[in-house]
Each structure stands twice: as structure tokens, then as C-alpha cells.
Length: 123
Image 1: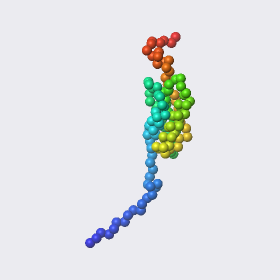
Image 2: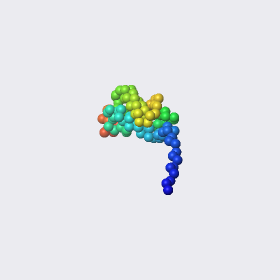
Image 3: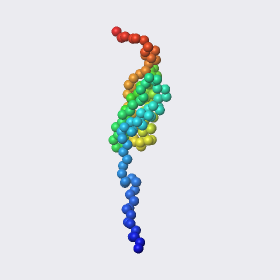
Image 4: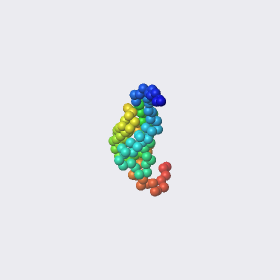
């Protein structure tokens, strides 16, 4: 006695099976890593770049905090970070990045580093 064949469920196309959501903190990690890649020579004492991201309908709003050397071409460094962050998020997370805001949290000056060993008082 053979068993009758089981009815198979109709195949659902991949696009109709569900959705994938990438958490904001994951996109923020992608942005921070991309910012590190874009900075060719970060200051020795600098904290690594930090990013915060808000995602809404596959659009990522990004804010990156940096510490940079001074004097240097701050605008060029910020532009490089913006391009790299947008490129990486679009590539890895397939999200649109209309803008990347940059906060320069600290400037590391060669003058401050040389004076770090001395006791300096401001009057």
C-alpha cells in the first residue's frame, strides 16, 4: 500500500516572504569603520570616530564625531569622511544616505602636544 503524495504549498517569491531590517546601531558601526578608513593619518591621541544613525524607510541619517589634527585641511578631511561613509552604507546596507553630518569634537594641535609635559596655567 503506497501513501498518496502530500500536497505541496505553493512557493512564495522571495520578495513576498518578509523583510530584513538592519538595526541603527549596525549601520552606525559601518559608518564609524568607514570614517576610520577615510582618515589617512588620525592623531595619535585621538579617540576613534563615533557615529550615530537613525534609519527610516531605508534612508539613513548619519552623524559622525571626529578628532582631527590641527593645522590641517579640515574641510578636505570631512569631505573624505562624508564620501566614504555614504559609499559604505549604500554598499553594505543598501540604504540611501542623503547627508552625513560631521562633528569635530577635538582638534589635536602640535603646540598642545609639545606643551603637554609642562604645567601651564591660564590667567
